[in-house]
Amino acid sequence: METTVTDEKQLERETVKKVTWRLLPFLMLCYLFAFIDRGNIGMAALQMNQDIGLSSKMFGFAGSLFFIAYFIFEVPSNLALQRFGARKWLARIMITWGLISASTALVQGPHSLYFVRFILGAAEAGFFPGVVLYLTYWIPSAYRARIVALFMVAIPAASFIASPFSALLLQMDGVGGMRGWHWLFIIEGLPTVLLGIVCLFFLTDRPEQATWLTTRQREWLTRTMAAETAARTAKAHVPLWKLFSNPHVWGMALVCSCASAAGSVLNVWQPQLLKSFGLGVMQIGLINSIPYAVACVLMVWWGRHSDRTRERRWHTAIPLLLIGAGMGLASAVHTLAPVVVLLSLVLIGAYSFKGPFWAMATGWLATGSAAAGLAGINAVSNLIGGGLMVNVYGWVKEATGSYSLALLPMVLMSLISVTILLVLSSKSRAQAVAMKEAT
Image (tube, rainbow, N blue to C red; front, side, top):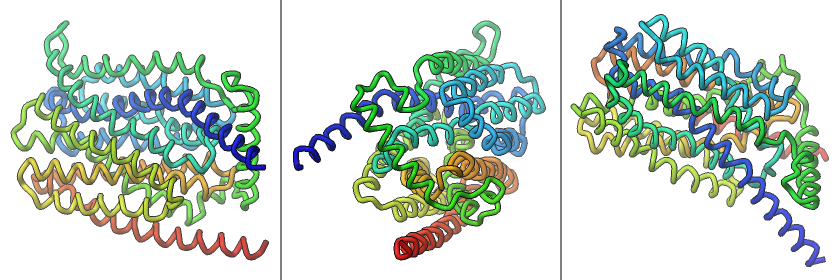
């Protein structure tokens, strides 16, 4: 008996390790370019804003249009992924957003920038929740927080890599008769198209189709994921129209909005905040990467800790509190070094939040509602966090003249998100206890 249990555990470890190494590096690379292509507008703004006549409000509006389109198209995109398969649909997403991102080099004024940012959001919509849904087909729930955290390391890693690289590209000013920001969009957009083509040949839709697993591994994974699917299906299935009238789903979206806002606001505005300290382009690129480097390391450790302790509630709440504390203190500090430390604190919170939260969210949603639910939560959080708060930052900055004071609305958002999370998790725990007693 002990030998059988040991063999099963060994098979589990080998299978999960093989699946992780097969899928995760490639998906991380794709997500890395997703965030490079959506966030490079922040570095490009150091030259572009003056060239095409953008005020702070106009730049904030342009940045927010990505998230508005993301909100509109995210749920339909995730439902399409379920229908057509991850391999084809993720490839479609990457190819189109890569081409559109590169075409940002063609914008001539505010209105053409507005148009390109909107269709970029529409093209990329569904990639993140699609990958999270895809991972629920392959990764057992006990491993999911650390895997999601590893996957999402691509977000801070994108800014860590792209900030100094984008600063270098801006130095190509005048090459071929083009401005540096033109080269930035072209060179950072086209690799995504190539990755999309590779996706068609590399990804496998379901475990039962994985010829790269041994027969035993394939059978174990198919059996394990089918059992988890059946357990989630046993929860009350929520029809799509009811899903979005469910306060629980909206509550999860509002909780996620805080981390989304922190990441989106700093991704778009942090280079200009650093510029306000009198830094040059290369200095901004290098210093801008520091908070993201710290966040890369700590978000992985936090996700692993959440899995090891099997605790999600406080592993999600504590990062939200870090965001509020970092934003509040940064708004009152006026020297560079403490600001960089506090921005690091904010980004640690924003990215450490993601692994435990998405592991918790996938566990709360019934299988039949997972695709629309995950996409809906992410879409609403991007609309509020990116679409609204990126604009709010621009409005406050223009009204006060201060990049630091524009961080203050995030403090209130952090407190609201923590309160909602604690209420939701208490209700979910009470429902789980009631279901257990009923059976």
